[in-house]
Each structure stands twice: as C-alpha cells, then as structure tokens.
View (cartoon, one colour):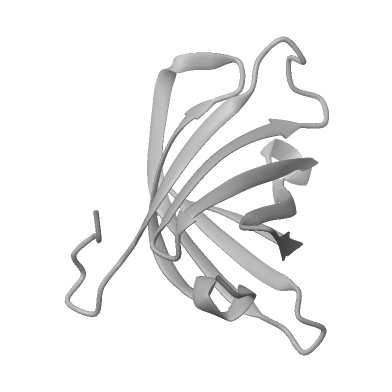
Length: 119
C-alpha cells in the first residue's frame, strides 16, 4: 500500500477518549501534499471541523490534529490508524489535555462514488 492509496473520503465512527459510551460520526478527507505528507480534515456531526497532517509507513498512518473548541480554544492530539486495506482504517487517538487513562477509538470506511461505504 502507498500513501496515495489513502487519498479520498471516509465515513468515521468513533468513541471519545474519556467516555467510550459517547459515540460520534462524521467524515474524514485525506489528501497527499507535495512533500508526501497526509493532509486530513474531519467533519464530526456535520459541525465540528478538525485538521491535521501526518505521515505513513508500513501501513500505519499517524496524524497530528487540532480543532477549535469553546471560546476558540485550540485542542491538539494525535491519531494512529492501522490501514487494514486502502478502504478501512482502524485507529486510536488521544488529546493533549485529555484523560491519559483512556484512548479514543475510530474506524473509517471509504465512501464510494455513489456515497456507499466499502466494507
């Protein structure tokens, strides 16, 4: 698998770092820049944008991300995806000031042209 194989849009399903009972859904868009780095944009619950950049090696994708919370406070973290196939990413994440006793979890499925997930 190459980094270019990951370009595209994915449906995201996840659970938060400090509350595995609270789940979320959204989309993840991945592109590759001229330096062969991943550029990522998440849209969670159709309202919260998150942005990140990262790198890919041995079917592992690592992305440092950030988003603006209440009062435009910037939150930062890192997500690590095991790329099971170019269409399925299995990940975990942590925010800088989140509860270090827990990790968030995400699973991403590529969206086909007709808006169906690949499984």
